[in-house]
Amino acid sequence: MYLPYFFFFFSLLLAGASNALVQDFCVADLSLPAGPAGYPCKKAASLTADDFAYHGLAAPGNTTNIISAAVTPAFDAQFPGVNGLGVSIARLDLAVGGVIPLHTHRRRRKSWW
Image (cartoon, rainbow, N blue to C red; front, side):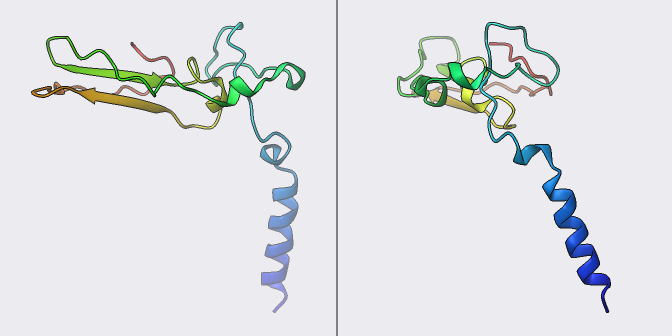
């Protein structure tokens, strides 16, 4: 009868010890090299509003190439505010008659473009 209450309070205890609750963001410090877990965090005192805003996706990409397509990435190297969140954004522009060739996405931190 008390077993569900025990598991509930035990899960609360474990959640309280979570490191994710202590640090809710980790803006990339692009002056240091990236490691397997991404870029190191900037010191909170040196953060600016520009670390959390990215305007690079507003302009269309250059589609004057053989496939008439362009990809504009917004990964942590371009947008330091997404570092450590496990998300990335990219804008794909296709001109009339543009194609996306058969390709794969390898699981790696650094992009090839």
